[in-house]
Image (cartoon, rainbow, N blue to C red):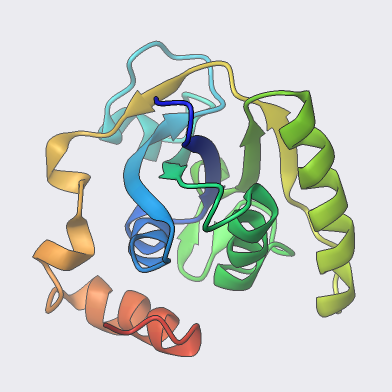
Length: 172
C-alpha cells in the first residue's frame, strides 16, 4: 500500500453487496471480498458459511483519503446495511453475516467508535456492530471478486443488490 492510500475492513452481511456499494464510491481504489475475525487459518467459503470458523464475510477497501475519509467510509457502511440486527442481514443469517468494523490501528478504532455513536441517532433499535482489531484478512476465492459486476442478472443480484444500490443512489 502506498503512502497516499488507506485501508478499511468491514463486514455488513454478504460481501457481494458490500463490495458492490464500495466499488461505486469516488475515492475507492479497490475492494476485495474476504474473511476476517475468526480463528480458522485460510478458511474456504464453505467453511465460513458453516458458521464454525468465527470469520465474517468482509471487504477490504483501499481508498484515497484525500477524496474519501475513513469516517466517510464508515458512514457509508452504516447506510448500506442494517447494523441493528444481530448476525443477520435480510435472509442471510449466521455469525458470518454479522455487522463488524475491523480496525487497522488505534486511530481507526477511535473514528469507528465516534461514527458508530453518531449513527445510532438514525436507528430506532440499538446498533450491534462489533468494533474489533483486524488480526488477519483472508481474500475470498476468485469467483467472489467483482461478483455483482460480473453477474448483474443473477437472482441474488437483482433481488438484493440492485435495490440496495438504487436506495443508496449508487447506480452506474
